[in-house]
Amino acid sequence: MNFRISTKYRSNSKELMDDFSLEGEELREALDKIASINQLLGGNNVTLDGVKQLLRNVSPNETITIVDVGCGNGDLLRTLAQYAEQAGLLFELIGIDANRFTVNHAQLLSTDYKNISFRCEDIFDAAFQEVKADLFLCTLTLHHFKNEEIEYLLPLFYRNSRLGIVINDLHRSGLAYRLFQLLCFVFRLNTMSREDGLISILRGFTREELICYSNQMNFNKWSISWRWAFRYQWIISKL
Image 1 (spheres, helix red, strand yellow):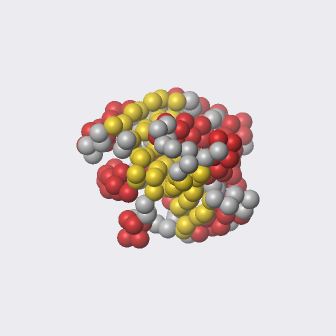
Image 2 (image 1 turned 90 degrees about the vertical axis):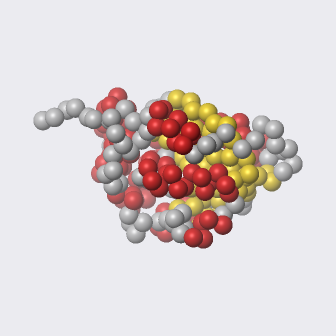
């Protein structure tokens, strides 16, 4: 048996969740488990911190429109809504996902939040090019795309944002892969969560790759920070 894991290059393997027609209890369980683990490991805080940085010089009286690309079960949007309420801020929060079952599940979990709405939409469709927002967020979403797709999407997010982009995604490393295998055992993750999670790590990024994207796309102001648990916080500012 070969126990060595190569993380030199990004994997092109497909995840089960990349099938937008997927639905059912296994998907629902996977979405909720991902959200709960993300909460436990502080993943949402990585994105929230980035949002706070980009809003540092914005008037608290402004209504801020935030689009969460690949919103999953909407957990991040609910975290942002709670933060806005506590901080006395005005957020209009929009979750976008290409899977109708996922969007329906997110809507069901978010009925108590009047400032959260959802759209079932493929971000490669022409209609998405017209979506404007103050901030675009990608939390554990960017790694689902191939390099050429990222090179298309990021300039689009940048053009259509007023303040910038916050990306929170995985650091590709052998240690992260092995630790996730342990986490799968501890939390008894289902097959979809386990297999997709391991592929996600192999589709993640190195700091050098994110720097290369930043330079290639001529972003003027950006920062990349390593965060626990094996995340990169990539903030692209237009301020």
